Structure formats: C-alpha cells, structure tokens
Image (cartoon, rainbow, N blue to C red):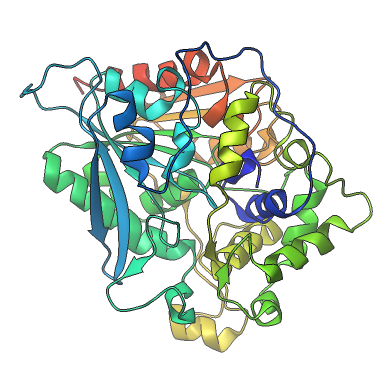
Amino acid sequence: MASLGLMGLATLTLCLLVLATVPHQAHALSRGSFGTKNVAVEPSVDGLCASSVTIHGYKCQELEVTTKDGYILSLQRIPQGRAEVNGRVAKKEPVIIQHGVLVDGMTWFMNSPEQNLPLILADNGFDVWIANARGTRFSRRHTYLDPSNPAYWNWSWDEMVTYDMPAIFDYVSNQTGQKINYVGHSLGTLVALTSFSEGKLVNQLKSVALLSPIAYLSYMKTAIGVIAANSFVGETITLMGVAEFDPKGIPVMNFLKSVCANPGVDCKDLLTALTGYNCCLNKSSVSLLLKNEPQPTSTKTMVHLSQTVRSGVLAKFNYERPNYNIMHYGQLSPPVYNLSNIPHNLPLFISYGGQDALSDVIDVGNLLDILKFHDVDKLSVQYIKEYAHADFIMGVNAKDIVFNAVTAFFKRQFNT
C-alpha cells in the first residue's frame, strides 16, 4: 500500500489497498532530501513510542482507552518537547491527532523528527496525543471479542463517531483538565466533522485543524476510485465472505486486481492515480510507509465509505433494506449528518490542495459553502495549489507550508 494509506475515504480507502497488492513503480518525488541527521528510523514491532518517539529523545507514554462498546484503543502521549527540562509544571494544551483509514498513528512519523507534525507540536509546547483506530495493529483488542470473530468487525465509521472519538476525548480531557485541540487528516476529518455536527465533543474542544478534509466525494478525480466505489456495494460483504477488510488478504487482493483490470484504469503508478500528483514526497519516507502499512479495517466501513461516494450524501450506514434501516434508525433511510450544525464559533483551520484527486477542490468548496455562516474570525482556510493528498502528511516542505501554519493557528487560540 503506498503512501496513500494516509487517506481515508471510501474509495480512497479501497484504492489504498491496491497499492499493497499490485506492482507499482517508484512514485515518490521530492523537492528536497533529508540531511544525514534528519533521518526517520524504521519502526519496529515494539510499539509506536519505542519505534518512533523515544529513540529521538522525546518522552512518550503507551496508553489504552476502552470504548463503551468494548474496543480497547491504543493511545500515545508525547507530553513535552525534546529540549524541555524535566519537572516543568506549567499546564500544556493537549492536541489529539487522528489518522486516516487503512493506516494507524505510525503514518505521522514517516519523516524525521524535525519534519513530522506530532514532534513539531511537542517542541512547540503542546501535549500531543496520537490516536489509533479500532482494528489497526495497536488497537486490535476488545473486552470480550477476538479479531478472529466476525462480530469483532461489525462496525463502520459511524461507530468511530459514536464510541471512539468520545472515549478518546473524555480520556484526554480527564487527564489534562484542558480543552482540546484536534488535527485530522482525510477520514480523521470526516469523523470529526460528523461528530461536531451531532453536538459531540464540542464542549471539550478548543480548536480544530482539518488537512485534506473529506465530507463529499462527488468530484473525486480518479478512475480507480470511482470504479472501486461503484463495485464495493453491500453484497461485497457476502461475496468476499469476510468481515475484516485486510488489504493483505487473498479476498481483498483478488477484488483489487479485478478493479485494476477495468479499461482506463492504470495501476502502474497507483499513488498518482489515486491521490493526484504529490509534489513533495521523499522516497525514503514512502519506502518506510510501505513497510508499515496498510492496516486492516472493517468491510462494513469500506461499504459505508463507498455509499458516501455513490450517494453524494453524508449519512449514517445504509443497510439497504428498509426494514433494517427502520430497526436501526426508526426510518426508511439512514439519517443525514447535517454539517451546518457545527457551532459557528468553533475555531477551524482547513488546508486543502489543488492537485488532490480525493479531497477535490470542488468537494472542499461544497464543504466550505456549508460553513458559509461560520464566524469569519473563526475560520482559516489554506489552499496549496501544488499539493495532493499525501503531501499533507509526508511532504518534505509540509513543515514550512502546513505544520507551521497549524501550530500558529493553535497558538492564536491560547488566550481565547
């Protein structure tokens, strides 16, 4: 799976998998390279802290949060910057960082400490918390279900909104006693936007940064994505016979190969085909990503994401059968997430790219139109003409263009 795993949506997701299963050319291009001291270390199986944080001289804690439906989620805390003196007592503002679909918290650490967002935020005085979605390698435990049991995988991204996000926010809020800043990329923006639209988490929030935001996918510019989304319907669950969507499993590999066999689909350079032309990736970072991703998710999540692509509507999971929808929602069709309900005074920073084939400029424009009544002084929008989807996580110049802007945005909220 290529550096696409970072993304997080319906189609996007499907496609990510293709990266892991179909031969592809070297696609990482860069406008710069790391110096000898700025090297990202290859992660080990020891855990995110040991592999990607403490080896660079930062403190890091491995923690666990249990959701109300029994999923045990891995959470890493980076409480201070590398140069800070031990014993500092001043309270710091917490930042929760949420990855996209088919990857985990490790994706934020593919670049060197000087060039990855979590450690940049830690060095700027923030208390950083890295979330790992249910079903990924560090979050595969449950109070009574085993991942080998199909019941373990009976969830979609709705459950991330209903259970995971509240559990993580409650834990961080209780531990810090502070209001929370939030960063999401791709699927991490979707679950945030839908949570806020339902009034969840808003009382615990300080401010929000959304990178490559996804709420709508109607103008997605990738043939692979469109074909995958149109193929990945509810019946796929039965056809594949699996509840876990494992990109490295034979059923998923066969499905993705069939997608690549469609006329007009070029799977030779998948990263560009799926995400758009990423201007600023470093080959060593992409290689590191390929060694660590993709991660599993539920097949139900993939179906749900594909429903979002096909319908053009941001709604809860559609069970397709009216009686099933009535049983779950009390109505024939699933409820729609109304993003206009997001509080107008919530400080929002939105950054999107002109070359992004997944978070397309027109789709982001539709999101911004929904937010047109947002308080003018609470909405900051950054447009980066040359950026595509993966640049926002791994771009060699992302620190200068995106991460410094995110840090400055959070610091502006200090006295509000």
